Length: 409
Ligand SMILES: Nc1ncnc2c1ncn2[C@@H]1O[C@H](COP(=O)(O)OP(=O)(O)OP(=O)(O)O)[C@@H](O)[C@H]1O
Ligand SMILES: [Mg+2]
Image (cartoon, rainbow, N blue to C red; front, side):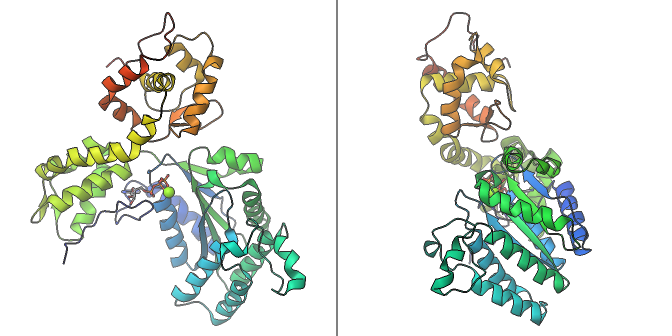
């Protein structure tokens, strides 16, 4: 049998050690405690760039909520969110896995499940396509009822609370929700906050999730948005060492340091480097040699799968824009700053390039007008490919007075 590997490289997988997220987990636990006491908790949204651990955290909070007696409905949004199906799946799961569910709550949930859609192609409508009415033909129009999702959620919440439990709704990839669906869920959370049966909401999404929510309902501005960042050196050590210890092994300090140097504490990358090093190691200790032996291969694989394909699509002008953004350092930057680096008199000239880069998923806009690389550590990637990028950018029409976009290092 293959030796157990304690590292988790699959997207959304919960690592054995959720390092460096004590504050976020604490906020989650506080909200869960309030909900368990029938007090309205401030909705929480975990935001951050790709691979920072939002889904892992959301799943962990949902698990904590279930352990505290909550019934959880956690779904991933898309533009045609079929929340009815998500609910069915999650309620069936609650029925089959929750040992201590009161019989009467089980029966009530079973009845509700019967009303929910089974398969998506039966349900041509969006999230509102849930009927609380029977399934006979005469009531078929109810299926399209605009507010039915809201009704189902309210009924579900009633049932859950009547039996001494509380309801948590989790929504991942908030930035991809359709406005209608989001509005219905927000309304349920807001409505119940004024009652003794408040629904707990925990979301996750890219940094623009707050503006997506705000566009639907401005009062969501007052929700708690917790942005996930790179892990620190110590947190990275924990992320690699704690899982090894559960299997009776450990990491040499300089091996963990090497992981930090390679991954910069980016959860996605650190799991990949740690997993490959683990596979390479022998005995009870993972050494720096293990990390060094696998690193070039892991880095190449990550560059190819995460960045190369996206950057290969860029025109020379888009490459020049990316280089300018790179020269300004990590984080989000204003169009005027980028225009200045490129020697343009006005940022308006760059508008179309920016739109293309947004479309090609190279950058995102954490707030209106701003530009930030969508993937963490893109600046390091560009450093590795600098010669190639400078060559490609040469074909962009140069303007007199343009600065050399190479970073001063
Ligand atoms: N705190 C953490 N410590 C160690 N590893 C983590 C941590 N959080 C997440 N991971 C790992 O990092 C990887 C990415 O996590 P996850 O998929 O949850 O990120 P995400 O922010 O949801 O990404 P995306 O935006 O692409 O959905 C996974 O392999 C996960 O196991
Ligand atoms: Mg995710």
